[in-house]
Length: 221
Image (cartoon, rainbow, N blue to C red):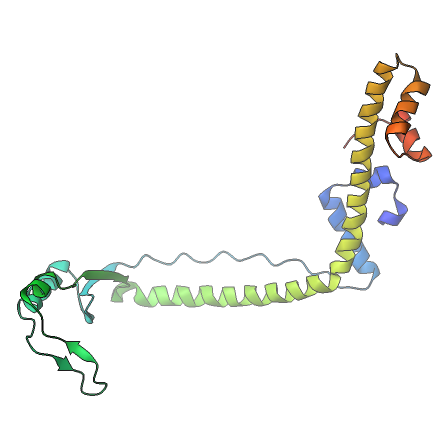
């Protein structure tokens, strides 16, 4: 297999990304570096939807109910019976409830929140699926971490190949523009190549090799 050193600029210009990837592999083989592909993230099992909804008061989250009406009833009772004295937690002396006015009693901030959980019927199955997915993800992340370290070690080869490819592509992009300019100069010079060449050379810095390519090669990118 050819390396970039064995290729002409035209051959390099025509390389596809797949061919460049093969050249990079070949260079790794030449340097006695193992071939390691980027791992593909596995397809995970679809977990079932959580099928039970629980409702609770934002001030009493440890008490949960299967319907919001029960929570509304409790909130109503609490608001109607808010204390007129201040109470403290016996362990931390954190204020729990303070004396309230009738206005505060009516507008005290008690809200109904909700969350979904697995029912007992599917909880075990869901946990098993989650466990298998976590194991797959753990293996994938380990392989990905190994690949990222590997990529750092062989980055110089990737740069070596792609830098040369970009260098050739930029060169021929420039030559294509100059070739288009030369075609316009020919029109202006009534197809006198000498005059058109003079226009081109006076307006740009061009080597003899580049001039031959501009005048006689059909450049395609």
